[in-house]
Length: 418
Image (cartoon, rainbow, N blue to C red):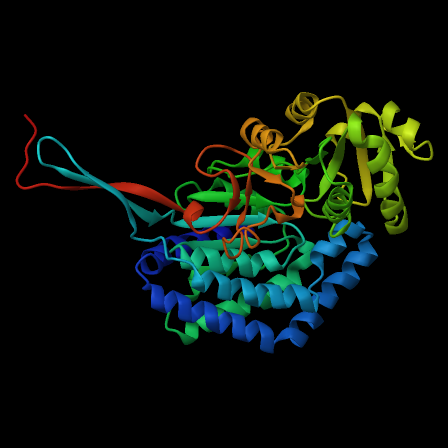
């Protein structure tokens, strides 16, 4: 079977399976997810063994530290996958929910009901936990999913996909509800993106290059974010100790992910006290700072920031730092250089917090919290299918509701239109 034939066959089977999955009861879906969580925990050593094959190959290929970090199935990541499935079980099933109902003057009763999108294609790099997160969210929301991970994670993804399929089979549900593309042939992605008659939505997850490739080549609608140039603004009124802790966490806790801070903006009124404090914390963690002229007057040891640094998504222990005069300057900087992903302000001023929340247009805006909380699990969505920085259909971390659409339902009593 050629790659073209393989992908077309998978897509046709997915479309057929979508009719069954859309009708599954909440109880059945939840039972499957709980069994998947249990199987993940019991199979931790097996999963780590398959993951080691991918890690060894990644090191031979010289993949970046950020990519290897995303690729690694640590005990913590494995526990997180299982916990994510259990979290999804606790969430309300959106399928069939009537979100509104109203009666027209002519007596017609009109409403909106949530329904699954249908068949979703996920194209992603590295992170094998996406396999489980996406499969769980799609199943709970009544969707079928085709998962095409990167070649660097093929062993991990196959193992996780097989695990999910085993549980589906045990529960008498079609295995075609969750399919992992078994080939590393890059042509598989192009074939998947052509199938607008069989696939309803494509969600790419990975680096900017992958996402732009998907957008440029897809005939299927795409939900996307190109990159995460996330900002933290330390306001003049901020408490230095809090600001240091948040700025450290936002950059250092996991630098290789899209919600890590990439640019630190500091009000001139607090720069003299704040910057030396955070510099010491960053120096100990091995963070390279690149600062504007005013920042380098306070921290002469650091490198000079170029224009490109304000646009950069480093995904590493590198940070651009700029001193600004006002809150307005910070907001203007974010508008110019940001990617509509995530921004945070550290402040003791209610007015400044309110303005920041209202005027910053990014998909997630935080007050006195790390940018690392811009995550479906952390925001109470259970797991996360991805983050959208496009404003049509979904904006920000995507959970169950974002995997449904709404149809109109209308009840009449013999009504005819004059």
